[in-house]
Image 1 (cartoon, rainbow, N blue to C red):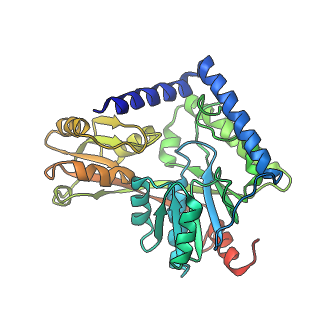
Image 2: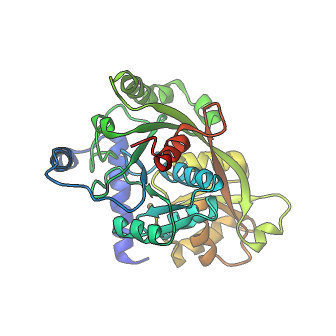
Length: 353
């Protein structure tokens, strides 16, 4: 393993442990500085000192308050796929991580997917190619771009009783920033997992539920809709997995920000899973990791996330079966299309401005 990657993994593990156990003084001081800078930046945009720039077509942002885990990517892909099926030439613009772009291409076939650090430039390129609407994946803090519709996903099942800013916690912004959102999506994961949590675990999610209740009571606050991100079947990634009648994996691997929920879902989908391997978010599967995964798999296979499927398949020997655990978004609304889709469509008809 490259020394830099090893240091990055240890640093990420240290910070994540601090988020759970409680950050030390240095992280708390860093968080205070981060919050101050973020607050001043938002004030400059709110007051008009700094101006947002418009893309040639309407822009929808699906963002969050935290780093990872709030369901931004699946909600973005679901929204784009629904708009595409409705006949809207839609483009998704991301930060440019190849794994996330692969996820969007699989979940929203036919939708243009562009990525890069300059997402205004990407949006202009999408419009020049014929897109009528652009969706930013993780765009709430990208205030350089004007957004016609700001959708914020909030993990309703998030643990923790305090809102801690980076690097002392996962929050990029506080709850008051939701005042500039047009719509909030309360995201919940598998309800079977929540139902089996002990009372101590359920007590940790109550603050988020309380925050949502307070948000709903704000005068002129954004509407709140609910969505479940539910696991689906295991999908073969390579020929070795496709040749097996029934998935039999002994290892679950994930390079995502919060792998614990995935590991729990993987064990339910494939009870033969005995080992779990977690890597930093967006990490590549190097040779050492692949050797370890193959050794742990023995004569059986590996289950991973869709986000990791392409990377792992490219590195894993062809004789090791590989599956990814699929998931889908289920909106808790009546009617053929959820509110985020209707709001995005309204941008195109001029009903929402």
